[in-house]
Length: 123
Image (cartoon, rainbow, N blue to C red):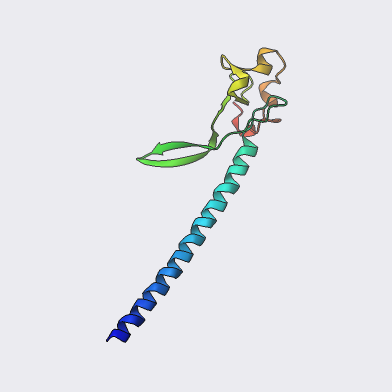
C-alpha cells in the first residue's frame, strides 16, 4: 500500500512540475508580447518637437465593465496640440498649444503625422 502512495505522490509531483513549467512558459510568452507591444507603442507615440526624445511611458489603463484594460491606442505623458493635432510632451505644451504652434512654426493639419506618430489622429 505504501508503494502505491509513493508512486502516486511521485506522479503528482511530476505533474505539478510540468504545470509549473508550462505556466512559466506562458508567463514568459506574455511578458515578451507586452515588451514588443510597448516598443511599438513608444515608436508610435512620441513628442513631435525637434530634439525632444519624450515618448509615451506606456498605454493608458481604462476601466470597462468593471475590468481594467490596457488601451494601446492612447499614450501616457503626451497630449494632442489643439492647433496642429500632434502628440506633444507636457513640457512643450502650454495652453493647449505646442511650442512650435505658439512660435508659428507648425505645419497645417494636413501635414500632421510627419514625426509625431499620429497619422491616424487627423481631424
